[in-house]
Image (cartoon, rainbow, N blue to C red; front, side, top):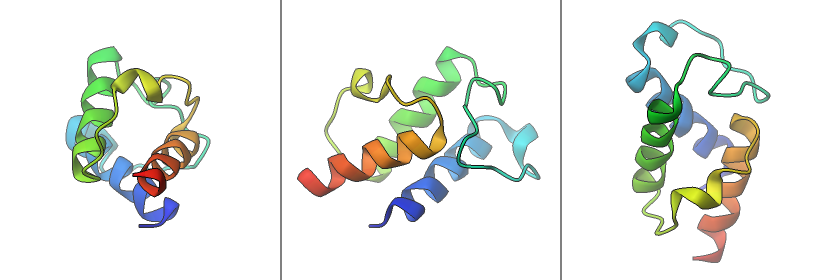
Amino acid sequence: MTKDRIFEIIIGHTREVIPELQGYRFQPDDALKDLGANSIDRSEIVAMTIESLALNIPLTETARAKNIDELAGLLYEKSQSC
């Protein structure tokens, strides 16, 4: 799986959790918090993405990601090492 595909998965889950973003054009430097995702929303989006990728990592490992692109990169790296 590519980093771009992981980015798209994150966007899909973000739209699922925050339906108001259906028509929003996501950018790599978008931060979930800045898009209106509260801490529960962010945890849910990340957990859904981790599950979609069949990864077994704690949510805390994703906390250092500052934006969607960094999150996709981090999850991509984890998917390559599993």
